[in-house]
Length: 347
Figure 1 (cartoon, rainbow, N blue to C red):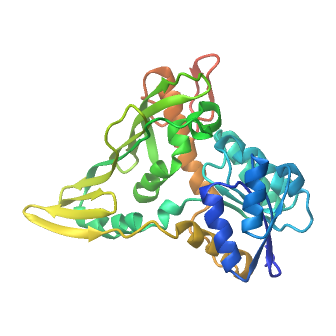
Figure 2: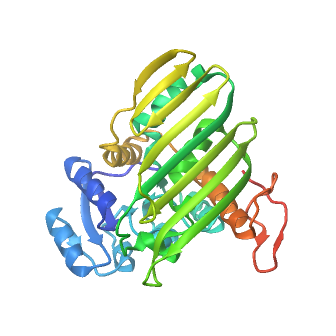
Figure 3: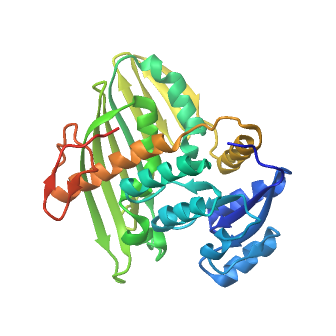
């Protein structure tokens, strides 16, 4: 892929939290120029564009047809990630998209293949890999010895539950797909997953378009024999927020509560500081510009994100069937309408 001429001209789809952080970084970097932005609410889009010196556009389709845009950043509702990314590649743009790339792994695979054919960058953001928590776990993981169990629980209390897109199942997606970073953290640390079981529950809101809360619990079996559990929940049925990561081995345990961690072995307790999550979207954006202008390799590939997405979809199918022993079967060939599930390839 040829290096882009400076400045890299950017079109931004989205006006939310992540989009704001990316816009700030683009303005700070002389190698980039934020040309245009589009959002769901016209007034908010106009305000966002004025703040960051960009042009407000009426639709993402119109934005992608502009010839003065090199890079499209997709930072909008999960349901639209796939179709906007595909359209951007077809329009000859490089693409950065927040995870998940798509709600359907088959669609994600097609988009990755399209990017390869078009010789364009497709970068699926996974800033969890850049954070202090993940790096601290990686640093201390050898200390625990032979791992036999890990657990990652994130519970968010929202009272009252907001009536936003991320509380609408069709826009948000299956919980572990929407919260793909939880799975991706495990696959980056532990390698290939060969089995998954899962249970999921949604609580309905008074407005039938939304849910009040969701709770998803999955157990993963890895090729190396390790077992990991993921618990993800949010909404107004919970009374205590939790963010806890545990790894247990025959030589010790790693326990992280939020950004504070400790290594435990016998009577030994060693404190570990994981640092702050601040600045990760800016770091990701900088790394994308490094890649486009200097050819510096990125920290994650779309294929790695796809592997986690396939596991999330396998968990969805397992939860839908009421049991989860899928052995080495993958999610691609499952026909939900007929209730059959043919062996596939979980890569």
